[in-house]
Length: 271
Image 1: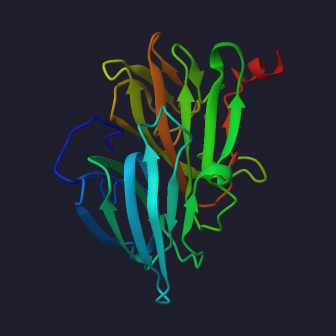
Image 2: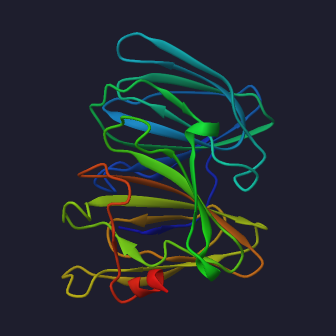
C-alpha cells in the first residue's frame, strides 16, 4: 500500500484512495466551476461530503424514494476560515452536486454500510469543537460526523494545528480490538497548508513486535493524503505555517476515542 499520496489534479473528480486499497475507506476530491454538476450514487456505501471551499446545491434521493435538498451548503473561503461543513449521505442513495461558486472544492469519503440513517447537513451547532492538548501540542479538533449521526461506520472531522504545533499527540493508535478501550479503525488524513508553500511532518510507526510493522516519516504538503491502516501517527506543522487535515475513520466498530496512547509518551498528559 502506498501510504503517502502526493497532491495532483485530474479533471473534475480525482480518485485518491481507490476501491480495495484499504479495508473500508475510499476517498476522492471534487473540484467544479460555477454551474458545473456532478452526479453519483453511494451504492452499498455511506458517504460524507466535506466542503473545503465554495458553495453548492446538493440534492439527495434515498433508497426509499425520499428527497432532500441542501441549498447553498458550504460557503467557506477555505478550510482555515471557519469550522467545517459536511453532509452525510446514506447507502443506496443518488446525489447531485451543483457548484454555486467560481470554484467549489469538496472531499468525498465513503465506507461499506447498511445504515438506514437519513441524510444529514452537518454545520454550526452540529459540529463539536474541542481545544485539545496544551503548550506546543494545542490544536482545535472539529467533529461534524460523530455520535450525533447514526451512521454505521464513518466518523469524520478536521484538525487545525497552529504554526509549529503538534497534533494526534500523544501518539495514539486504533488497530487492536481491546474493548472497552481500543478498537480497530483505519483512517485517512487529507492535508492543507497555509500559506500553500509550507509543510509539516507525520511520523507513522507501529507498536513493538508487530510482524508487519513499519516506521516512516512523511513530509506532507498542501493537498497530500496519508493512509493510516494501523499504527501511531503524530503530526507537526512547520513554524510559520498553519496545518489542517480532514480525518475520516471507519472500521470494525464505530467508537470515537477508541484509541490507545503510546505508553512511552502518554506521561505528557499528566504534567
